[in-house]
Amino acid sequence: MPTKHLAAKVKKAVIPVAGLGTRILPASKSVPKEMLPVVDKPLIQYIVEECLACGIEEIILVTRQGKEAIENHFDTDFELETILEQKGKRENLTVVRKIVQMMNIISVRQKKPLGLGHAILCAKPLIFNEPFAVLLPDDLVDSQIPCIGQLIQIYQDIKEPVVAVEKVPTEEIYRYGVVIPEPVRDNLFKAKGFIEKPDPEEAPSDLGVIGRYILTPEIFDILEHIPLGKGGELQLTDALNRFAQMNGVYAYLFEGKRYDAGDKLGYLKANVVYGLKHPKLKRDFNNFLKEVVK
Ligand code: UTP
Image 1 (spheres, rainbow, N blue to C red):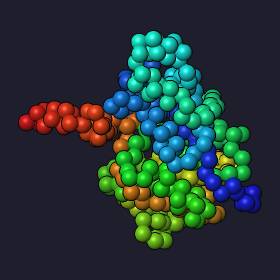
Image 2 (tube, rainbow, N blue to C red):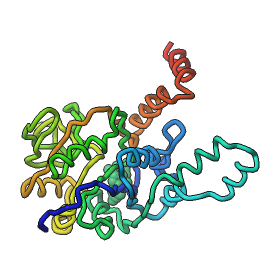
Image 3 (spheres, rainbow, N blue to C red):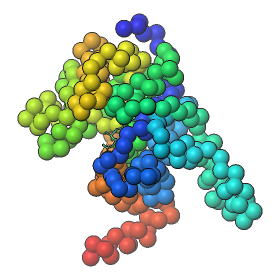
Image 4 (cartoon, protein in one colour):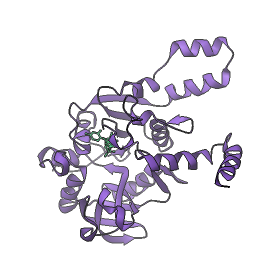
């Protein structure tokens, strides 16, 4: 493993979007799931806005064929802008231009769907000797301080990789990477290891990893050397497990509520919760829901 001397600030975020999105089919058949809207914005925009709010300066999308709509969303659409300008639709024009100006976005392709660990490894040439954030766009986190900002604060204190975890009911634990925890202080644990998708009786805790991480480049060396894991995929959890055994990895029980918008029920829940918070829609939507429940 290389010696550290890492850049102190987390300036880059890797957002893997090369997955197949089978859990939300048929919606994701020809539309990337990251482009599915929650209320009035595609999922990916929430994630980019979260990065922007936390001082991230550059985004690396790990993408694949058929996902071009994601890059287009953050690019200028001259025709649309011209028409909006001609029609005097100033408010729409501002919204559309703001998206383009948001962030410097670079993309790299994952040429085979070999799993999340492999997707992260594809970003290696674009990460230097610096810590970086990873955000999975399925996971929307409703919180006071953006979830990745909470992890950045922890990273700045401990200078070791940190992953966000939530408490998971026993019957759902088999869907998560689960931490073997050693308490450090309120809501912070040192991970003695991680187990990917354990059977409930083998789960070492109820702390499941969600899609927010701060990692350091040592993870790439590990990903390059570990074998394929569950499902024949290069598992990020396996790499984190190896990392935790050699070095420090921390798990932080973040403040907030996470919605898995890559899953049908989670997606519906996210739309309801974000609809009830939308400045222009919340009152009418709230009234509508009351009527429906009646
Ligand atoms: P998921 O486990 O949600 O897989 O990936 P998926 O393929 O996107 O969706 P389902 O489970 O079939 O419905 C977690 C994250 O890792 C990315 C996905 O895009 C998602 O952001 N990923 C996964 C890749 O980039 N490449 C892969 O090979 C696998």
